[in-house]
Length: 229
Ligand code: DC
Image (cartoon, rainbow, N blue to C red; front, side, top):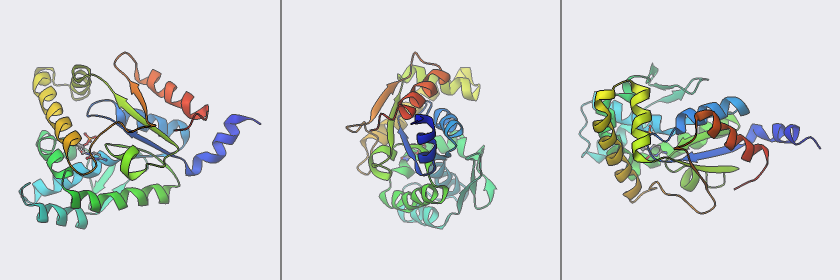
């Protein structure tokens, strides 16, 4: 049987879960993979960022967990076909990538009730779209542990900072960006609820020496080869 046709039939309900630290290239890779496979790209970091951005707009203090949870429960989050997020109808784009959001999002994402509000929304997107390439910190462990394919994208802290700087075009801020990323990684991987971790059976891909094209090609090879979990 032609394997690609067989894989093609299955793609409608396929879930590909990708985790990894900040700046490892998860969004870029997941978006590209989604395009290649005809699957919806689900950026779950954008959802936590949206809650953080909305909390900033409303002047909510990050120590006020009850108020953060209210924001997370009440907010209307939607994605367009390109996977871009809309917060209560307005495009989240620039706002959720602001450094003020970088500064608080890990604290917001560590609140269990905030996560409890967002995880069902993530599962609903996967259900409605009939499959996704989902990226975040707990896709492979908590949200989609039964995903068809699970990957952990990694890179050294220096390389991840370099990529972020290239993406945002602020070379003078490299040191600050690296420190802010490391602090977020520390919080994301040491929190009690759904910490970032490499779980058994998840394929780790070290990307320092690889281009985006090479990473995408490698993941596609694994997926099309049918070498599951
Ligand atoms: O991937 P990102 O940098 O956009 O993620 C923003 C923050 O949200 C980061 O601190 C990790 C957190 N996050 C999370 O806790 N769980 C997810 N599934 C996705 C992101």
